[in-house]
Length: 158
Ligand SMILES: Cc1cc2nc3c(=O)[nH]c(=O)nc-3n(C[C@H](O)[C@H](O)[C@H](O)COP(=O)(O)O)c2cc1C
Image 1 (cartoon, protein in one colour):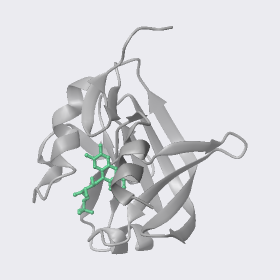
Image 2 (cartoon, helix red, strand yellow):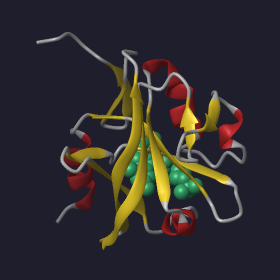
Image 3 (cartoon, helix red, strand yellow):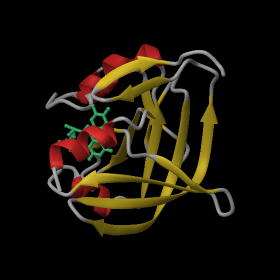
């Protein structure tokens, strides 16, 4: 299979953009930009996302009992870039605070889901996390979108 073409084809699927966060065993805040987030079940309320196996943050998400998914607004494009880079102080930008379940949550995000990790599973070169939603919040801000390696804003309602 031509991996480059597969990557291109997969990239045609437009997604939202999130920052998934947790607190590691030493109390350090951890987070990265993630577009693999998806809703999975309403009853019980489950969501999923995946992390590349080589991520230096894998150990933190393996040990953490909970994580938060922060769905980014268009105006938060800078945070998406920051949390996808090798920046040392990722949480230095944006209004971050600990949520009701102890995870770093972003003020003014389109939505925030604080989750308890219920499943961790290897999935090829990624690790799949399924979380049960413990608490959530949402705002009607314009969402940030991602497709074919570029950021986009929402178009017209069809
Ligand atoms: C729009 C976008 C979506 C991304 N989605 C994911 C994802 O779903 N899973 C993942 O492991 N990395 C994803 N990444 C890459 C990580 O954000 C990037 O590798 C980051 O540096 C990871 O942080 P770490 O190296 O500290 O783990 C995405 C990057 C961007 C720009």
